[in-house]
Length: 115
Image (cartoon, rainbow, N blue to C red; front, side):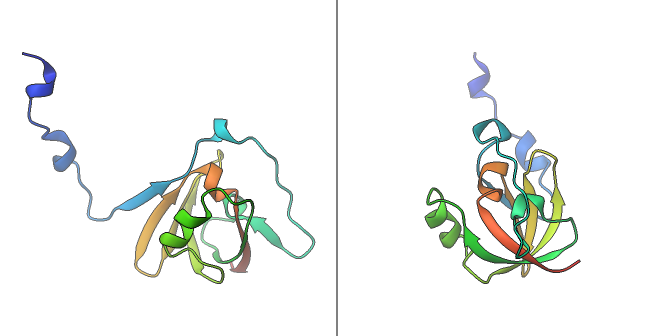
């Protein structure tokens, strides 16, 4: 018999106490170097770990409806939990965490409220 007949025990056995949703692309999908603007607006992908940020705009139109559906609206406050050099981030919004791929994290423009 093939492996498709075996029960899937591994995924449930490794479940952690917390979870997050992962959205967005990979670094290969979008290679761009961002520089902070003169008004302090930066992509979420460049926000320092541990900082509190507020969403001020979205770059481009792709994925904006998905972000709005996730509750990531203009003015939403987030805390950056972790980030990778590729640009993907894990953020906290109130009591939930979500992972965002580098493609989408580079399109969310934020301002750092406090470090």
